[in-house]
Image 1 (cartoon, helix red, strand yellow):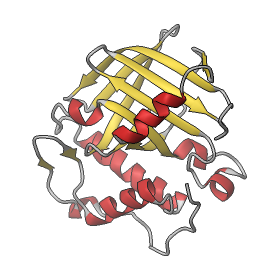
Image 2: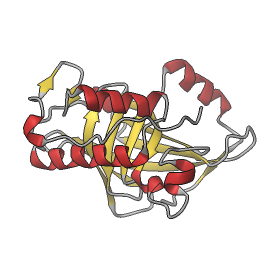
Image 3: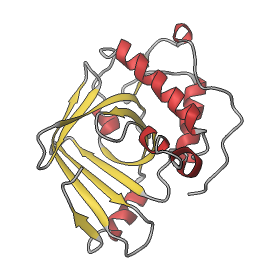
Length: 215
């Protein structure tokens, strides 16, 4: 994907007193319906051109509001079911020296994909460090995938590990997912992978995939 310069927009912080009221629909839960937040998330997903400090500022505000209103959610498994690509991570941005200057918090050139299957209560993750055809894809498997609507939390356990990974779902609209993760990922933004793109990825899998249970 293209590496674009950050926009000239100011800080993405906002006063909690000015937050709009919660709105829901039959398919999605928006913790915030602010045009500023939506625009920044769209730019992050589509162009990867939001300044990392601004993204972290926005995500921290979403996390703070989630902590204040965790029970104002409803079961949005439909928005979480499926395959997503990691786009931005505060953990990448916070890597000393290169996190913001080189990667700017984005998953470049590596690619990381996660699959949520609530029917079978499983999670699968694929990590490819370099976008080369013969470069191996490392996979992680998880079980006991659960959605906790009152806390707006998603939990699972990696195979071979006893600790439970917890995702606080900060935003989900079916096309993107924003979460705070208890694992090394930090605050993350993910995009849903469209069906045709997912089909192409499925065709690439096979002999280049290496299984592992390391987190």
